[in-house]
Length: 92
Image 1 (spheres, rainbow, N blue to C red):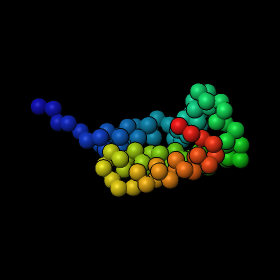
Image 2: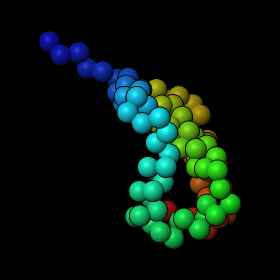
Image 3: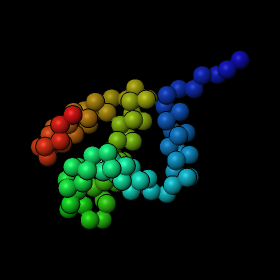
């Protein structure tokens, strides 16, 4: 008999494994983003220490975990960040 794991458990396990494999995934993630969308790199010109990128990644991870747990906060955060990104000219 197979026990089905929750989406939250799968996400948390995946994040834990990723954390063991790579101390800070932000540089890898943003390198891949900039390869796919070079026009985005200029938006991070003032982020000389990677702090903004790290914060954005943490917010994205928090939203994934919240959504997997059917939490209440991710929709509000995503709506707010959509407007924030729109002000920088980033549209989906």
